Amino acid sequence: MNTSTGKPADPAADKWLRELADLLRQRHGITRDRAAELTREAGRHLAESGGTPEEEFGPAPLYALRLADEEKGTREPWWMRREVQALVMGVIGASWLVGAIAAGVWWQIAMTAFIVVWCAGELGAYALRRRREARAG
Image 1 (cartoon, one colour):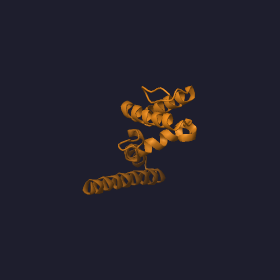
Image 2: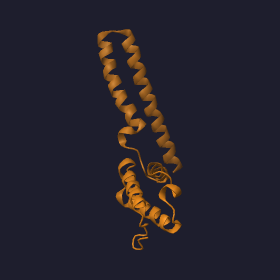
Image 3: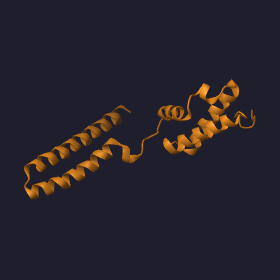
Image 4: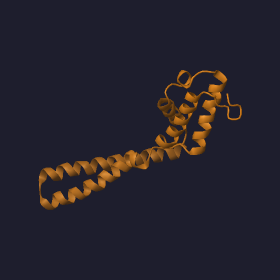
């Protein structure tokens, strides 16, 4: 065991811990400092238990996912958020609706109107959720 870092001297464990840190930062968007802190905690636990990372925590990708889920303030990328997708689809749908109205094709008007209404509903539901959270929190 490396007493200065609290990490085990096992090369396989070192590789697992490096993979964990990389996954936390790159895949799950956790800050470098917080990922380093979580990795140090895992390293200390491994040093104290004497077990292997797989025995103690399981595969690194699954453990990183579990840690990321537990982290407060970890957010998905902005382009993956449902309200952003609804807004983009609403804007695209509205432009299609204008084109369909200009062309006078009834089925295109109905289809694009449905898309615009659905997106407006999604955005309205998002606004209501945010309002409730603001009142509760």
